[in-house]
Image (cartoon, rainbow, N blue to C red; front, top):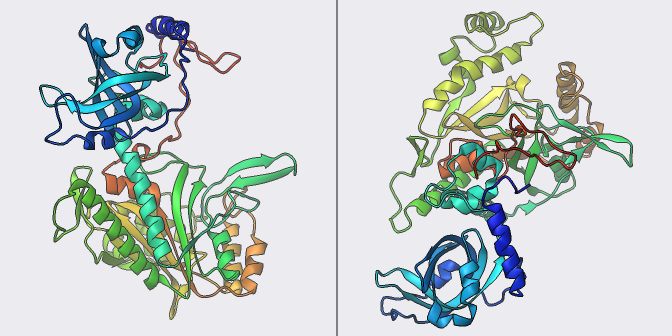
Length: 518
């Protein structure tokens, strides 16, 4: 497994030297540690050169410089880096052990926090210990881990080598924490719903199939938690949310991963307008939080602008609102209810236009082809509202305009970020829309079977409600200026990597001289 690396044998020899010195090379618990950031904050302008307060820190050795009777180490943890100085005159009895330390090792050091002649904040170590011996070298100290493919496949190397990547995932965690606090402040409760479902539903998407052996039962990884969260509304939990993992057996690109994270929430006695207000308030508050991260000491700006992929997005409320029908008419050149005009437009756009293809499917494909590229050019979030009812089987119809549904999608930089409805709670209409949806589905697709229990739940009366889903991965992309979803998902799905001259052995290990460089 490790033998392809030319440094492995030397590091293995050092491992044996640690053992011979009576040291467990894979360490034990270390008490009384503080973070590197906390240790740096112990240093003050009047701190003596040789050090003031003492600190005990632990982390990974990123760089080691041996200049004879003095060894300088750059130590890193998830809060930052600090220099460690080991002087032979203070560590005489452990000097041979100090010589064994090398880049990649995880170690602890204690000593006074001072500085060097050049002003570098430094822990002047009077004691140290090995926590875990590294058998492989860390990525190149000057270039980090630049290979994009390797960064995704070996995220652990990316995180230890690239502080920027680590900061992205810490910031993503902060985004999720902010969302939870925001919703708790509005009286929502967090719940959990099944990830394995007998009947997948809540979205038009192809599910992953799995098998429960003990029950001899086929199950599906959920494509959406919607139908279960609505059951909770029926059961009198009036404000619920879930930050959930969904799974859709579909393609992969810069804004799609088959396994992704969603915020989904439902609020009884609300509607589409309530969801619009909630979405705008939450997203603009998150944008302000991200702006503060970039400009911690600045006054609040007049316009809430964030960089994204070479452009600037203005998140200042209120967000723009555009009707689906108006956008369709303007950029497709047809009225969406005019069947003949829609089919002509499909022909002109070279969209497959068979007699069997439903009108609403053509409308949806034309919107994606002709309208979404226009939305991509806009530098402000846009609520697109009043969708064709035929595309929205779970949504309440617009009173007096039954061909439209009370639904919006929030687009930012051309990406669909949020989707919201006034929820359909009439069991008779819900049965009709499910039946129509099933008529166009094939076995293996979402909603290939009727969810009769959900219809029964509606029979007990679900209160009028608004519902909202926000893609957390895409939200993180926008707020953290990352144009690929793989940059904000710790372990994105990738094709298995098999070098040309390699194959897995019986134990699943790959043996090859053509692995990606460390």
